[in-house]
Length: 258
Image (cartoon, rainbow, N blue to C red):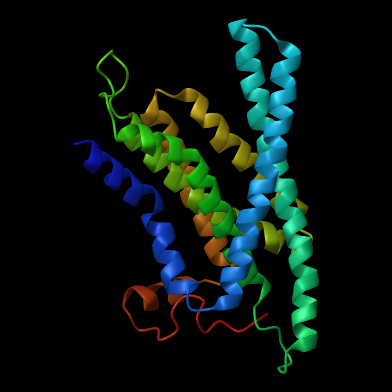
């Protein structure tokens, strides 16, 4: 049973991300490099957030429950803001890298567009975020012990997997919207990305009321996914052609650089 939970939750959380990687990134070395770089930037943001959290906990040095909860909220707030700052820093770095690629490229356009960079970097952020969110939980799922034996919610592992899936996909959508907002200087879109990130992270405080937190998170994911789809140049006509298998271009494989 523990092995089934482990592999089931792993497939739920990382199955879509693995499919996106295999079909849209694995065949292009340049995209793989930018994916790894995006994951590294997320790791650096996590390191900085951890340092701030460690200092805050050390200075508080109290076991008061209200203070600990306040520190937890503070930690989540700082972590989200730092992640978005590093997303912007990565955008600036990619802009400079893209100019360098254009100078050495034999074609008039860059070998990879900003929209593709946004998607790839967002997936890098999402995969690394999901790994660090779920790896310890997956380790515990192998046993020994049974979740819920002492009255705790038995859906803990399943809910954690679905929440990780939401965060992985949301990072992809946030990346697309964020980069486009930086390109067009659409500052209110940047604010929406940051606020929605804070909101989804804050919804985890509703747990163990998993139905409420997951339902709200998936609504936000659908909203951001629709926004990212049209931001990336999608349309209802393209979606229909894709679903009916009438479009020979597969996702990003033949997209021209902008």
